[in-house]
Length: 289
Ligand code: SF4
Image (cartoon, rainbow, N blue to C red):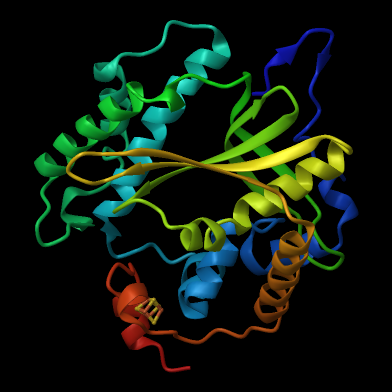
């Protein structure tokens, strides 16, 4: 929820238009059962169009889930709990409370269906989580610059004519002295290079675009909070101003992806990176066009 700020509630992330005014939402609902698209769906399509089809059109359950995904969700949940306490004005949770949240991410999964890396075990990942969350609690990022306005805040709105609404959740929304800051929390094998920051920014660009349409004139910055999964975890913050040309380019990319989805352009895009953790390997092998 967005925090109250004096006499007014910030209307920043409310939908710019009701869902029913965007005709493309109906098309999305017919194709996928959901009257919107998410960044995760766009990104899955770009990774592998067939994987997108299995997940979003056919609704196939995944045969397996990667430990990296479950682990990342757990860290995410724990860090959000920390910011949620700040938002609510509650005492900040200690390491044990954050680890409890982290462990909850593993509960919905069948342990036999989780694919671990060759040098990983559940115990080694739990120990890593403890080191990462300790580093986070001791880092400047645990204290918010300005104030927290929302945690896991829903955002929805039309990006481009003819494309369904984008729906998502902003990990953390804060406001400092002169701008609104849209934060995405990431876990990473190592420190991020400048290229990684630039290459990973599209989701935040879209969220900031929606926020800027609803809150015109307010300066908006995007920020990545990266927790490294290294032996000695590092907590990095990468803040960038939003460049209009980058937003335009991202919108054009999303439009092309949606046109391809509408046109049924589904095909396998095999690669070592995409396929090793894919939960549809058997369905993919059985696919014949
Ligand atoms: S196994 Fe590879 S090619 Fe097949 S659906 Fe998964 S990511 Fe795509």
